[in-house]
Structures are given as C-alpha cells and as structure tokens.
Image (cartoon, rainbow, N blue to C red; front, top):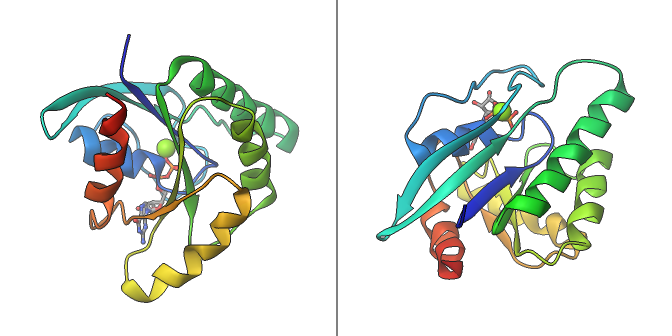
Length: 163
Ligand code: GDP
Ligand code: MG
C-alpha cells in the first residue's frame, strides 16, 4: 500500500476525531474516556485530488501503565514501518506529557516525515500556547481544531505534497 498517513499520539488528544473528519467516516469510536479506540482503523481520504489512506491508531486498552505505554510504543513502531507520513498529535489544552516526550523520542529516530499536530486549537488565543511543542525538535507545529476543522487544510496541503 502506498500513501499511508498514520495518526499517532497518546489517548484523548483527538486522533479519532481528526480521522473521522478526514475520512468522513463514523467508524472510529470517539469517546470522552481515554483508551476507548481499540483497533487500528484504515479509511480512504482525498485532498486536492490526491488519494491516500488514513490510519487511526488506537488500541490502547485500559490496564497497567506498563501495558499501556507498551501498546503505544507498538503503535508508533507500526506507524514508522508502514506509513508514508506520520501525524504526531498532541493536545494544546494539556501541554506536553511524559508520554508525549516518549513518543517524540521514538519519532525522532524515524526517517519518515513527521508532522507535529497541535490539536484543540479551537480559538485563536490558543495559538501561542502550542509554541511549547517546538521543544520536541520535530520541526514545524501545525495548529488545528479537529472539531471545527480549522487549520486542517494547511496541514493536508503539506501532507499530500509527499504523494
Ligand atoms: P483519541 O483518543 O486520540 O482518538 O481522541 P478522540 O478523538 O477520541 O477525542 C478525545 C476527546 O477530545 C473527545 O471528547 C473529543 O470530542 C475531544 N476533541 C477532539 N478534537 C478536539 C478539538 O479539536 N477541540 C476540542 N475542544 N475537543 C476535541
Ligand atoms: Mg481514538
């Protein structure tokens, strides 16, 4: 398979919400509780005439912290293996967590293009708060709101430039 865009990140940052918006599907389960999406979901999406597959990585079942973090590592490794482009999603309303740092460490070792996506930037006043995500050392930070769709066009323009 070619042109695969994987969305990775810790639970509750909004991965499934973005996935549903990009694919206009209701398949990914969005819930207010962490760890609800259990599977990897694959759906087709299209932007400015370019088709690609979006992967929603969930698979984080409630359990001990060790199992939890191991599952996330596994998802990130799978994404690094199979994806052409990786969207590393973080949450501007919570800022950087230890898990975010751990995922960033894994992604920095990948040669695949990685986009840092600061989600939940629902209002312009939150834009400056996402500057802390530059500390990952993964380049440009893309501010989006998966709920309103704000910023997703600019992000997709960059993503499909690889296809
Ligand atoms: P996932 O665990 O990363 O797949 O996150 P979900 O897509 O399930 O979203 C977790 C929670 O964050 C849900 O309550 C969503 O409605 C909420 N959420 C997702 N995107 C946004 C956003 O852009 N803004 C706000 N305010 N909430 C969001
Ligand atoms: Mg999810």
